[in-house]
Length: 412
Image 1: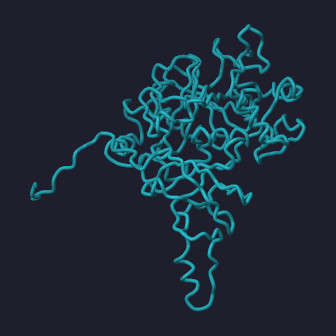
Image 2: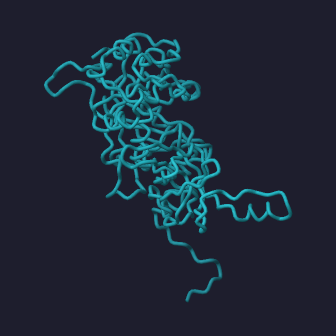
Image 3: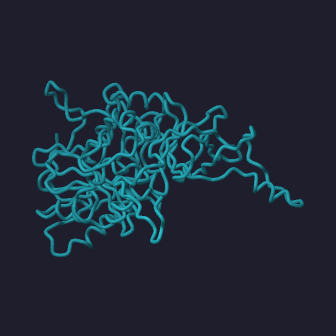
């Protein structure tokens, strides 16, 4: 393992990952591989713990100083005071109305809290945290320029026989800088609206390992029979299968944690005050989230995979699978509009799974019938979609507060 010591750098990560030297490399648009020529094969290898994913486009922030955990605890949704070195958690930063603004995956080494974030989050979240330091003993730094992230479904820190790890995992104060996703269970203080007996997250063994960027060239140069790699398409498909929300895909300007079942791993319902806590408590105890996350099993017979943001509609009762075309003559346009399927939400993530076929996560209106057949608009086609309930329409109202009778109402 390598030590995490040394000053942080403001150097930007390279535009294209060193893994671009691998055969079949196809850029996903952010400099890392979407795939290496065989997305489904890569997905199978990743699922069984036989491949890694280059996530060097992600960001890394650090918070140092003796007040770091109590300070982060006061600002965000998770209970972080007393977080033991090497223990993984995640936390959300909400606005005053409880809407989701930032998310961070957190591991602490005893002196530094390492925040693993989306690359687009580094500037906004880092700047906001820096402004909130006031007189507290904390320092915020961007380590994205010298620290990179590797994703996997298995432990990269070395074999059970004590052999040296193939991936040079960074350590700090004898703590391996590995974030193990807590999504596989409901964390202390959290709450899951999903069916606990049939949650695919139970089998989710995902983790993110920090390495020095200077080590990426050597890693990328390893032959495939020593270090197999998978692209981000493979990881996304497995994430969707596990119902695992992600800030970059599931979150928009209206999202609250309840809608995504993110109370499961990133919110502590019994901790002290933080911005947005009132909304979190109110919706959970006496209200309902306005939208709910579903997983969609898509009809793949047309070979069409909808895009993120595609409209989700109630499936029309007619058998036609083509959207009505508006006409210009007379009232035909109005009739076509009236016949158009009713919109109930939008797709947030979509993938082709190696076993399940085309699948997606979508946010739909809470009142959408849980048994209703849905469809997704893809160009001029309606792709049939069966919904698998993640967040039920009954989510919330956990306190069971009785309704008070109206003044003057007569009891019967």
